[in-house]
Length: 150
Image 1 (cartoon, one colour):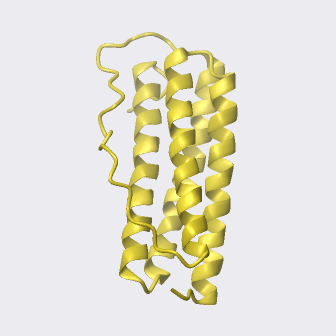
Image 2: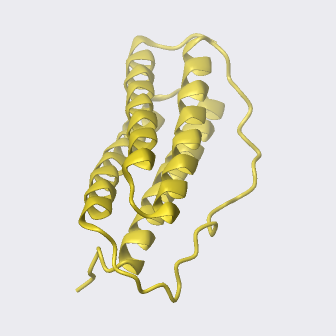
């Protein structure tokens, strides 16, 4: 499979963004105060690494099969938890949400610019996982009184 220059550049950008996410989640898992948040960050770091590896394969001319892992959309349940989070954890969550919003939005352009249907499907899948990461962090924040909806 041959990528156009535009596809290559967009995918290289996304791969670099994924690497930043791996580093952020890994670092934040060490810095988080709450063990629940540490776990969320560790889990997300591992998925971000999968995204990075998938984009590397695509850039190397392979179209990897889409991951057929278990859907973990509801893995993190925070109903009934009313503890207050720390300022440190709130800062880490706010920072990672900004990163997830940015990375997810950039997938839109990459998806529309890809000619290959299978690559589009893979990128759609990755983008969905990015949005789920944001949802997990948002739900965590809301359960700890860190994100007020008004």
